[in-house]
Image (cartoon, rainbow, N blue to C red; front, top):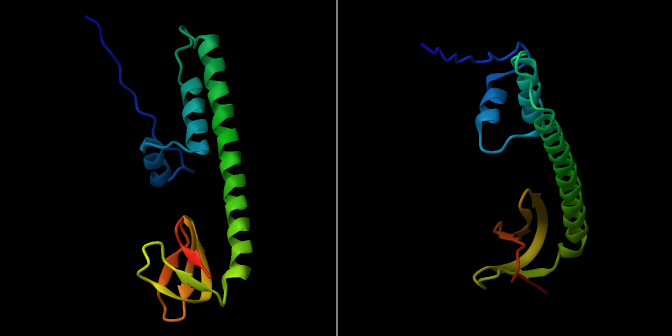
Length: 135
């Protein structure tokens, strides 16, 4: 009779339940990927070591994840820089929303994760998206 074993790796003392749930989410971040790789190597069967080609493939994947994270950070920085350069030129100008329903003079600009939002004198917020007219 064959017996299959199922083991679970309990979180370490420095892991929170949030990091454990984030590893189970659809997107795995850099730290979660590293924890999974280390756990796999640590808990592999010594009588059946991991195939070296698989290990190299996983290390290459790890490198790709790291590079993707760095690229995303640089893109975020570039987007923020671009948004901040727009702010100076927008205050005091007239903005008409892309659907033409909202218009007014910009008194402030707010940078959000999805882009830039112009705050008009009447308090209305207009996202600066394609189709917005700035006069």
